[in-house]
Image (tube, rainbow, N blue to C red; front, top):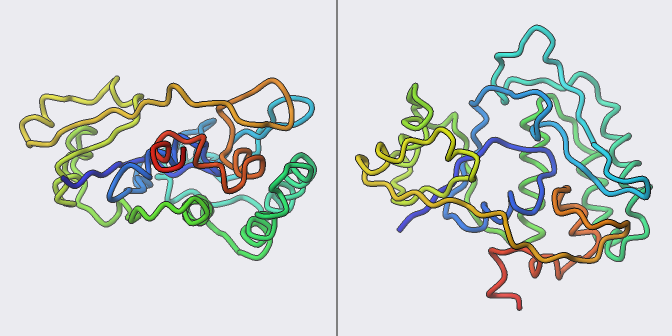
Length: 234
């Protein structure tokens, strides 16, 4: 049965985001959704000797709080240099930083971005490639979107000819399962529990950081610390 997931794009997401992508046949970037401030859309956390630090992309949202994610413009271009230098400063001693440094240096310094969604998608696609994730990525803008939140997600499922919808656990607060049953769509809930710890440069261990932390510290072994790869890598 065809399985899909639908999720807003995030900036250099954590490992759970990629585990979800790796478990479905198609992944829909839901960037027609309203942009949410102080969320994961334009920021993520890294480890530093002083503790956790946010990397935040500056975006132009003043007076435009109802904009869709794919309408959000970047407010300046200096963030690219700042973020890359911050990653270099805090991860240069990580075992596999040199293996991936050129890849991410190019993404940060050799590309021109105007919109937040462009940044997020480029990094997501590149990280998928590094991890060997082959899931096909599509955009919510390709589909006819219904008004109700549950109907909108189920409508995308039907337009994709999907029989199974894999959702993040937060959607349980609003998702109407009765509507899924009426449309003949099975709903599965992603679990983000039970991740093993890996070698991080700075204590104490923290799961909820960008996947770049895992890549720089574990390199080709990174999938061993991700649930969707577990059976094939242990």
